[in-house]
Length: 302
Image (cartoon, rainbow, N blue to C red; front, side, top):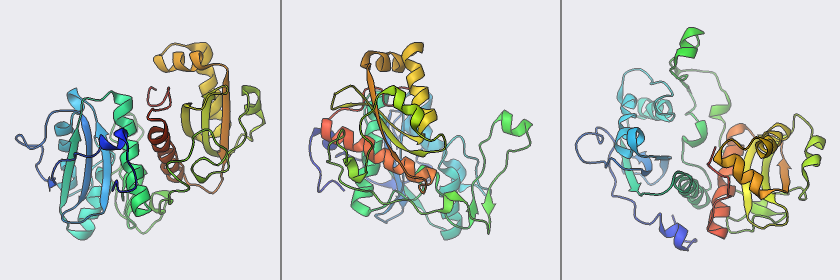
């Protein structure tokens, strides 16, 4: 997975545990009660179904694996406590397969751990030209995803278990292949194979069509390293980031404030589905981490 990449950041992903059965791995001492990364695959196969990360306390690796016990139930589980459980349940229901898990524990900060998760996913994407099968909210064709399980949805009568379906939705659309190089320079106009706009001041945000969606990057004026990478409805998202400069209530707000004056650059693409943008955003974060050996300064702080 790491043949074409090197450096001390990649080396932090070099010591995954051996594979073990996912079923009941949360019992006993097979999984440590530590923060870290995890990856899941069909037993004996090389292709990954999912890569994730989890923290300490009530969300450590052992407890996070226990949140996947629902994939062995008769009915499809809800999207919480684990967002990938409906998709993994669907694979098992369709194929009768078993799963294996491998972990990488580490006492990283939360932003750094999430950055390493992004890097793990992108290294897999660039090696296999696709994402792990059910990352980014995707579902196997023939199955409808369950909703979340919370009081608000229950009160509205909108809490539903998924299951077999003939309908198709965006969760069944194939992911997007990676573009460009992970080792390209984050402030360049062709970063990661995209055609970025020039770097522009805050007042240019109002000229972006309100419906325009895509990827964006934010930097301190003239600096090479970025402050933030994101995706979504561009004008609304960039306005939201600008509001943090004057608000300055949280740690991320202070980072934006200290980075002023800010500059913005974006890519508009109306064809990308949401999970396509999430995949490409993930690659941009991984690229920044690989090239600069740092995360964008406000990334994963919200």
